[in-house]
Each structure stands twice: as C-alpha cells, then as structure tokens.
Image: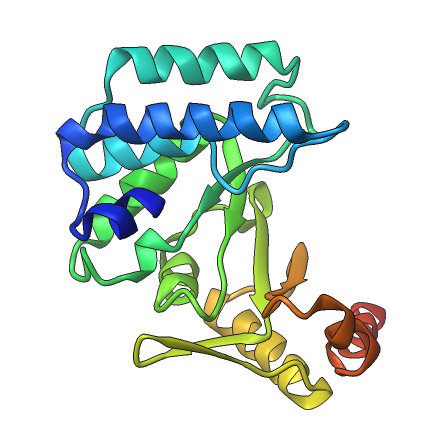
Length: 212
C-alpha cells in the first residue's frame, strides 16, 4: 500500500523485490524500536500471496526469506494457537471484479501456506461480500472485521455510536454469510480515548458478545 501511494500506480512484477525489501526494512525498524512485542499489519507472507495472486509468480528469495522468518519466530501454521493473516483491502478495490476464480485460488493458496486468518472490514469496498461468496469451510478460518469507518466516494468518515455499531455488525454477519464473527475491531480515527470514553461502540460490542 505504501509503495502504491508513493509511485502512484498499480504494482508490477518487477516491483516485488522493492516491496519485499521495504517490508523487511520496516519490520527491522519496528523490532529495533520495540521493547518486547511487534504487531505486524502485513509481513513477507502477505507479499508472497499477493505476488502469486496478481502475477502468478514470486521471486525465489522473497519466498525463502518469508519461510526463514516464520521458522525463526518458532511459530508454525500447524500450531492451533497461531493464525497467520491474509488482509483483504486489495481484494476489495475492483481490480478483478469478474474473476472470482482468481480470488478463490488466492484463498486456496493462502490456506496451503498455513494462512487461516482473514482480515476484512465494511470500509474495504466489496471485501466482505467476496469473502462471503468464496470462503470455503468457514469453520477452518478465523474471520475478523471492523466497525466505525465508512469509506465512500474516496473518503473515510466515522461513526462510533451504539446503534451504528450494532447495525454494522449485523450487516457484516449477513454479508459474510456467517452466524458468528471471531473478532471485531474498532477502526479508530486516531482519537482512541474519546472513542472509549464517549462513543457507544465499546458498549455495543460488549452487548453483542453477551448475546453470542
């Protein structure tokens, strides 16, 4: 995402080396600054998945580096407490609107690589709809969505009220074609304390959890 914003065009296969190198540099910098824990929104496995999905191939060194980092972390995809994440912003942007088979293959490849955690949101365009239509074996996946952000006409706006939070979760359940969500996050606008202290989103999520 940062690369696309910087160059102002969709990525090409020749850009994968640069994107992967930037990912590694970003992770190293985050680790250097961290006291104990680093939480990654993306990692090299994401780069491998997207490269195969969009270009049908991935530079060998990127795949090797992703595998080495996973092994070094002492985590394995087979560990039931480890859920590797496939984000879905790019699935939502309409680049392959009529190519459901390509999106399905992307999900299949993710599962083969041990990725079983889907990160989506209503603000990610048609992401939830596509996941609801294509996701195989729902119980084999951890699905996380978000509340709070509405993305329309190229701009974000936010609503953290109790009614809108409930409405958003109920709509996500319908769109994802599931009767439960594994995780729901508040898609913050940056003013976290106000959201916790004044908005109704937190109370709404507690109530929805209580209802099951």
